[in-house]
Length: 348
Image 1 (cartoon, rainbow, N blue to C red):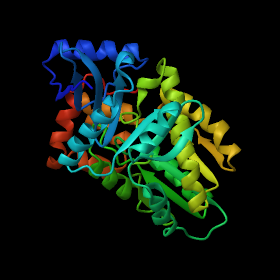
Image 2 (tube, helix red, strand yellow):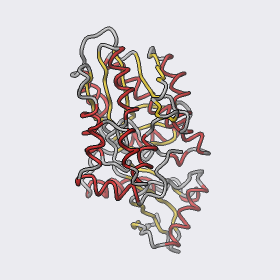
Image 3 (cartoon, one colour):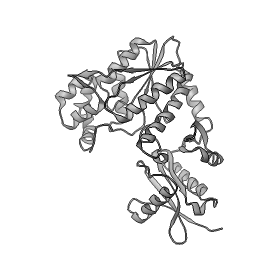
Image 4 (cartoon, rainbow, N blue to C red):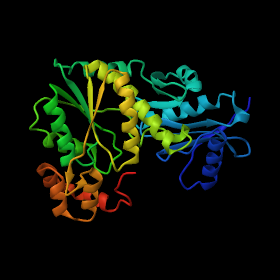
C-alpha cells in the first residue's frame, strides 16, 4: 500500500491551492469562503490527491480524488484536522456532509444532530452534545400560555430590534431571546450582547440565551455542497429551522417573531421558508413590519453605514440611547475603525 505525505497548505502556495480547487471541483465541491486551515495529501509526484479544511471549530471541504478512494485517505485527512483542532483548544467539533457520506463519519466518531433529507447531515463529535444543550435549555423553561422566541444578531442593536422585542414582549407571557454568539460580525459578540441586554432591560418577561454552536450563522454554514447561492440560502434555512424546532419543543415555544425584510435577499428567502416550515411544526411565524424613520426602514446595515460615514447625528436617530452611548465612547474606537475600513457594510 502506498504511503502518502500530508501537509498544511499555506496561503502563499498557489500551485497547491490550484490543485485543491481542481480536486474539489472534480468531486462536485466548491471552495468555501470561510477557511482558516487547509491540508493536502501528496502522492509521489507532489500532486494533491486528498484535502480537507477547518473554519473555527468545524471541518469542511473534505475531498479525495476518485482515483484514490478506498485507500483510507479521508480517514488520514480527518485525523490530521482533528489533531489540528485539538492543538487550537477546540475539542467540540462539527461538520456537515452529504447524506450518503454520513455513515463514514459515524465510524470516525461523529454523531448526527439533524438531517435534511436528500441534502445534508449536521454532525458533532460529542454523542450527547445536542441533547445536553437541550437539557440545559429546559432548565430555563417557565410556565405561560403564550411562549415566543426571537433570534437576534444585532450587528448592532437598533430601535428596529428594540421595537421587535417590545412587540413580542407585549403579546406573549414569555419570550426566549437567542443572541447569535458566533463571531462572524463586524461587532464582537460581547458588545452585541451588552447592547441587546441594555436595550431590552425595560422588558421583564424575556429569558436570554447565547445561541451557542447549534444555531448556524451565514459564515459557518457549509455552502460548498450547493449548486448556487439560492440553494445555499435554502439549505441553510432548512438546517437552522430544523434545529430551532427541536429547541422550541424543549422550551414549549409556539411562536417565533421575525422582522419583515424588504431589503435583504438572504433574509427574505429565509423568511419565506420559515413561514412554511414553522407552522408544519406547530409554531406560528409572526412577521412584524419593520420600524421606519422618515419613510425608510431601520436596519443594522443603515446603522453601520451611518457609522462608516461618521454621521453620528443620523446614528442617534436609529439606535436606542444605550447603543448610541457605546458608539461615542472610547471603548467603541476599534469597532468603529473596523466598520470604517470594511468594503461593504450592507446586506446582500
